[in-house]
Length: 36
Image (cartoon, one colour):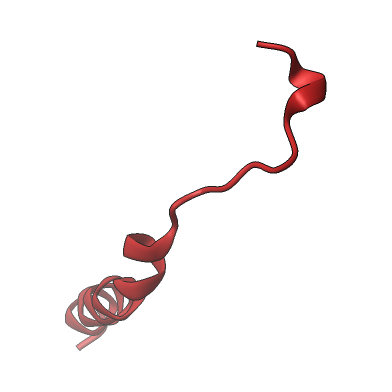
């Protein structure tokens, strides 16, 4: 494979971006439980 033939690189970030809400909610819940 010749790297000069590469025109574009793509990355699949859909799952990470679409699930940001769950991660953010979990983090806030943890902080809330520690600082009650």
